[in-house]
Amino acid sequence: MKPEVRAAVYVRADGVCEECQEQLGEEIDHINGDSPELTNLMLLCKGCHRSKTDLRMRPATPEELAVMRELWDTRIAPDDPARLCDSDDWTKRELDLRMDRRERLGGPLKNRCKEVVSTKPVVLFSGKQVVRIKLCDRALRRGACPAAERHIPQGNTSAG
Image 1: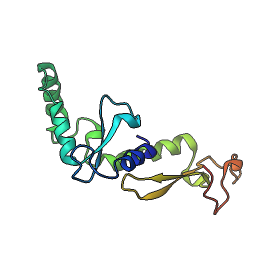
Image 2 (image 1 turned 60 degrees about the vertical axis):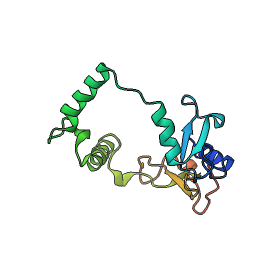
Image 3 (image 1 turned 90 degrees about the horizontal axis):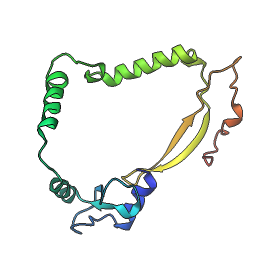
Image 4 (image 1 turned 45 degrees about the vertical axis):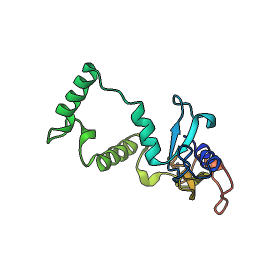
């Protein structure tokens, strides 16, 4: 969901749960289906969101139970991970794998352009505003970036 849409839902509800009107709204709920349109979204407190979710729950079918049991038995319960992504240290391992792949495909990381090519103000759900920065990351040729025209001059954060 786009940050602008989240912010619009929060502003429309004045930060208050649109169901009970008593608690601060903390979660955005899809009223019907999964459309991200503003008219299909509402701000709810955790209690109201949980109650609404519980109303839509149904018992699992025998087929769904069989799938869940198999996942539990093969991926969750074993001490040794069945897949690399099941490992407790997956986040670090994934980063290492991505870095290795990038080096294989695009040359050493130290020979990559680190100039800013775009900035974008982002409003977080908490209301805090941050700036997302995208770096060029092109492979340097003879010490220069082949896409230097894309770079934003230092100190200029108004480009998008």
